[in-house]
Image (cartoon, rainbow, N blue to C red):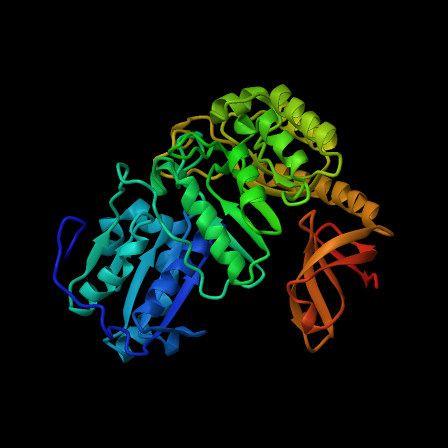
Length: 451
């Protein structure tokens, strides 16, 4: 088996020869963006995307380690392709993403059906890896390149109206529950000039909106010292992009400067803010190594609404973290009542390998975690439906992204990141229009275009 330290001579010319490639993706927006990058690289090798595994000569599972039992999910999915492999011995199967980075050689040893393992730092080596595999040599490419600068070009085949742009990679926070530093590596930021050039090129291709991506996006710092707030300002003034979004931000890095820049450039920087709190109790936050207290978070939320009255907040919550008492869990519920979250992603804690919290001895029983999660979701359902009603009768700016010929309706997103549906035509795609909202639900709004 070839590893990261081995090399071979190969040519990428006509490797794909029109062969089909199927990429199965699960996980966060970063994984989706990685899959887009892989597909672009493979198309350069003359592969073509297919919609079904049985049409493919190359299958890649782009995996995520955040949810419970991620390795089991990979085992299960690869098992589905065993029959295809038996029917077509030339079929190559690879596993990429966070599970690949986490398991490395163990994954290939445990699942012999796999031909290659591609870590999160090795995506741009995919053409080389596929060439080696086609020569008959299994490959594991999962070494972090910590000392290398983070220089990539945004590769998007069909960017459409809205697309993602990576600005940072990895994370230095080491929250005790999180595996990201072990699967994405230490934090690195892209050069400012590269990002400005990337966004301007996307604008030339018709992109109206970009979402800046990073595990901890607002800790961005370029080689020339530009911080995240300053990056937003430069993108607003030095590019032709119409809308800017970002995810995911960390409360400890959400500075007054960032809030002020968002207020100053509110015509371009959207007011939707995803600000994961994880817990409403300061002691639990300390055990999570989050770097802020409940009081810090509430003060930050108050400051956001003072400067950005139209701001929309969403968050992440973990219930049943090791040692969490009933009283500490109640603090999470009271925080939900204090901060008007319009969207929420809540999970029962599950141990991740290599993380500190997985070794804590005071794990919370599964039945307690499930009961707490149900209470969080019930409370949020009540709060979010009430918050949604404020949109009824209002007029929102909506960037149109899609048209459904069967229904005659278009779909777009408001500045608040709500999906809005209304009657329209295909010619509206890419346009920003005023829509009066008639019906409002937590994630979906319905209305009519104001002519």
